[in-house]
Image 1 (spheres, helix red, strand yellow):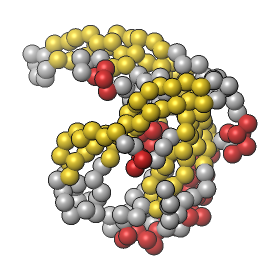
Image 2 (cartoon, helix red, strand yellow):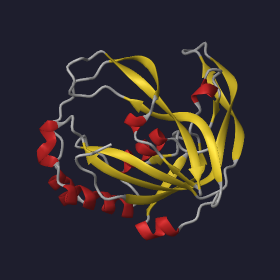
Image 3 (cartoon, one colour):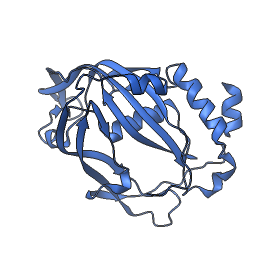
Image 4 (cartoon, helix red, strand yellow):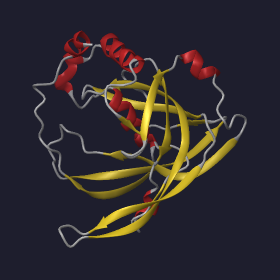
Length: 246
């Protein structure tokens, strides 16, 4: 696909004691089971927690699996009902343990936000991202769910290319997995569009998963009608203000 603008790639390492990238099939009974690897949507959410503005669209290119895939099942006490008469139940959540990933991403301009054209300063956005990665992020990062805290560290392109993951020289197919959500665009006049989930075949080669772009996903599922809320963007800080504050 031809893209009008694409930034240079950025790289970071993220690790943690546990992760839970929930397989939606396992949620029906109130329990959760993690996918073996992070989803595109989870990595995009992590990256947007590091730095995001409506001027940008974050695109996840690749992820490297640096540690062996291991799971651990914990019993979780969950509440049934609300109010004083509520009761408890036990559910079982299956987490990934001792995880570490290397992530490669870039950003593109959000072509649906023509009102933010003046904020399209590639060099300044790039500098903010690099400073943010050096500081380990601007907000708390979670590996799938809030109880799974993640830690971020900047990685250079050479470090990324030279790093060999745990499954080097192996090819593993994870089959069809959830890829990402497709939200209605904020500038669209139709406020009753559909929220869709997208799925794709995930293949790991030499420890690396190379994601297809969201619009290339051919398997889609309509979840529900989705009303786009009217947001006030006149108070958004410009990239110049963001950089000066850092």
